[in-house]
Amino acid sequence: MRNSNIELLRIVSMVLIAMFHFSVHGAWPEGGPLASDTAVEMLSFGGKIGVNCFVLITGYFMAHGRLKVQSLLRVVLQTRFYSFAILAIFAIAQPDLITPERLRKAVTPVTSGEYWFITCYLALMAASPFLNVLYRNLGDSGRRSLMAIGFVVLSAIPTITTYNPIGSDLAWFFYLYLMGGWLRDRPLWTRRGNACALAGGVLFVWASMAAIGWAQRAFGFDYVLPDYFIWQFMVPTFAASLGLFGLFAEWKMPSIRWVNTAAKGALGVYLIHDNPIMRAWLWPHLAWAYAMDAAIDLARIRVLERPVMRWVEQRWGEQLSISSG
Image 1 (spheres, rainbow, N blue to C red):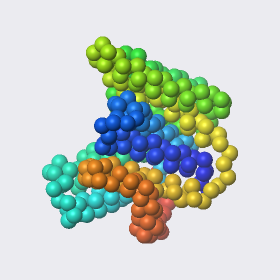
Image 2: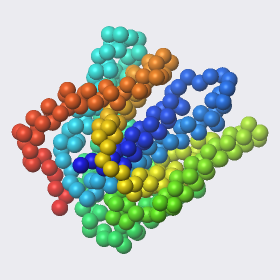
Image 3: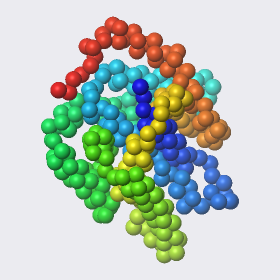
Image 4: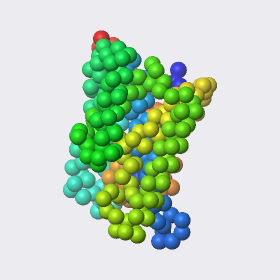
């Protein structure tokens, strides 16, 4: 049975990611409350929290289990389906949007970086058996040390110095994966602590955006950009992510069918709305179409994915499970 509290977090995370893309790619008015750069950047903050939460959720469940090749296959097929389908639709409906670069990425969506998150996420899943072995063999004190060292190297140093000694999204995903497993065994904060971490992180980033934006306009300050603190590895964003994740993880929510069903379409929302070809068309003309993404993905799951994955499991079954023991 699915944990509806975690499934609801998937939905919330995707909404935050969509807001980030809306802030980056949307057409903004020249007047009104959303005309300023600071207001738009404030909308973008949640996207990196959403990315962090998605990876924390993966570690929360998979660090204590084992990789099923079906899970990898499902993500690959889902990614290819949307990339090829969107390419085919626009090749007919609006071929001028298909530039040579977009075509190259569309035919190799997993390896070309068409979806950076998918490329890193699949690499994370492939590495998960090794991460699970590491997690089990460290013991509690070793895990605590690893979390502390990772925080200093991957988060604190880049935040304080503007220099990222590793600078790898995949390394950050590895760290979040192990952190997700650790949070399942040993919650980091109480409910009040999680709420304070979330509120403190959000308010700090928003305040920094306003202050840096004002300093730029008033004094020509250009050492860092107003959105400096929004990136997923920055301490305030990381703290807010842990707080949001902790609040949902400890929420004793009964199983809610519509939440569990809607959450299945969360990745499809990302694959549809952040496709480069779709993106070039969507924002100028049809921003409200975001609401349709989940429904489209649920239809794809029912019509295509379930029959294909049922056939794969019947044919190969347990042979596709990779034990990390």
